[in-house]
Length: 417
Image (tube, rainbow, N blue to C red):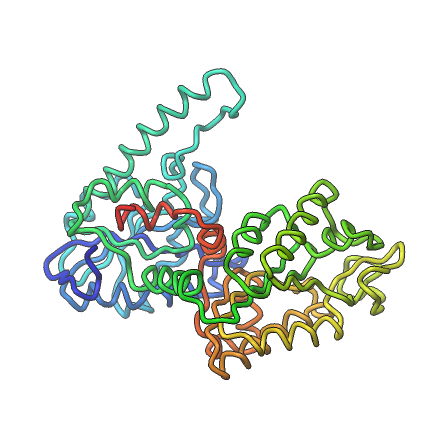
């Protein structure tokens, strides 16, 4: 594999898959430019070498249709300011050959939203999986996706993937396009390489004790992750809404708390597997319950197994946090994905904030910490702790699939796995 730091882009055109799917307000202004800043080392390296840049990204979910509210034209000026140079814009990503050909060394071209074309995601349009003819439609779309990827590849001499957040998708711009470049002219960007290395360090080279903190609302979204981690960790902390399925499965009374009845057998199986493997699986023991699902609702702290009817658990209680703190501070490797409460409500964000502080404290004590997932990242950012953990992952979905043990198409397409 060619590494970006060893490659000279002088005189070459590089097409770079970035993740510029940044949040916008109603006026089309960027509210968080973290993803743009994250790509700068790769982009500046190419420009400093004397190469020219073709930037491609998606934004939102336009479902294969042009949507002005999701146009990347809205972010062109921000990208230009970040790179300190003019950024040209191609209003149709599949019809940018002339604009790409005209690029001079040091110039930058930003392509319009890739997902304005259904070929980017490669999903047949207007037909469901169980409809007659779906198989034929899927084959036609696969051929169209390859053609779309070939068009994008034709703009440049080199392909660089620096969009970890989409690495778990076999899209035209994240995986298929790599087929049109030889091994010496495709590579991971700095951000992608850091992400892959960070996850690899945690899953394969973890110092022990190794603790994973998995939160969020539903067991169903992270069951595979939990199962895979049981073979790797010493401690597994499960918090957030998903914990109530485990509590109810053991006979607990959870009031109106979020849970998934159909996954209670799976929850019991996880508890049994943890016991067999010698993994300490620590659920919450106390919750801050709310009478309604709102920030200003009435609150009370109750035992996790005895939540009154009409109340729902919405944050971790102090007794839970005290147990989790002891586990986290005693760890040498920490993986954190997902909040342990309704983090979007200020009155129920305390537990997640405390977890962020514990992880930062453990890191200062010499632990290696990897934080990923939207609310986990938001927590370390909100409390000014992002620079006090070892690594903050930009790709929640990609990180979860990597933790599950899945091969990421966007990485495999470069590494040849």
